[in-house]
Image 1 (tube, rainbow, N blue to C red):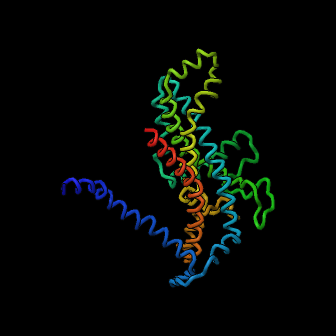
Image 2 (spheres, rainbow, N blue to C red):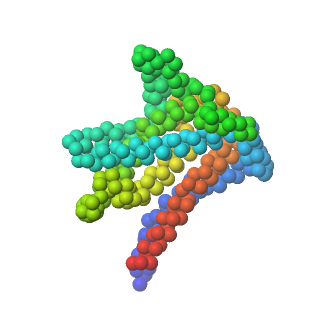
Image 3 (cartoon, rainbow, N blue to C red):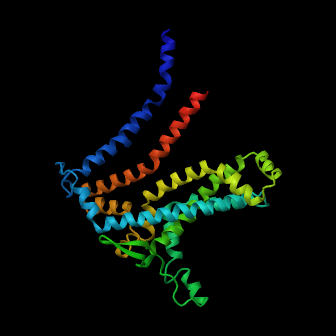
Amino acid sequence: MHGQRLERFVPFLMVLPSIILIAIFVYGFIGWTGYVSVSNWNTFVPDFSFAGLKNYAYLFRDFRFQSDLRNTLFFSVLFIGSCLVIGLALAVLVDQKLRGAAFFRNVFLFPMALSFVVTGVVWQWILNPSTGVNLWLRALGVENPPLWYVSTQVVPKIALGRIQFGLPLAILAVVIAGVWQQSGFAMATYLAGLQSIPEEVREAASVDGATEWQKFRYVILPMLRPMTITIVIMLAHVSLKTFDLVYAMTGPGAGYVTDVPGVYMFETSFRGNHYANGAGIAMVMLILSAAVTVPYLLGRGRRDLGDVDIN
């Protein structure tokens, strides 16, 4: 009896160290960051006196932080949308079982092996307005090639508070670099989904007279919906916490046209010693990430519970 009781606790004891470490180094530090964000610790000397929401009010009035939220919105939409389209196209291409498909699969996946820092440096060279791809464009007769990441233009430039709301053209250079690296992830996820679709399903659609496009549009694409949701969640998480790619490639940019909350948080906390403001930025980033991931996790949990009930 004693041995059976001990055996029941063995699984719990096996995961107990992980639970303790996660509680301390994840949730404990989240709580600490939240506490610092409502303190007056904005100098080199610690000051944990309660400041209320003063730091958050300052952030949302701050021109740079407003620009960061604008840039994050446009970067996330363009980055995720481009990765979905390119990743799906590459997956369909590789799934055609053509000769050399394995070679191209590895080629498309290779950028994922690089860090965002390396990717940022490489694309900074490629898109350098003076020495990069613009040299080829000028050789082809283009008189005014793009300024890429040094452009300060915002389109359509709608005045919204203190910022010009619109797409900063400089952020497109960062999007290109990010898409180059992460499209392989989208391709691999979609490819796994394509290869899991039974051949009988495709054959049944053919027997019903569906064309190749109709099979893709009405049979295959709906079955790839779980993969699409997974890619969107993962890439949204990446885009909201982007730091190293922007920091290595462009920095904040002139007029903060390529700045993002991660860069602002780093410079505010570790260069300006405004720890409470930096903690506030980190908490806003956490809330944005939670707004994307928590609904997905709750939905996934309900589905899992439904599966258990059925069984």
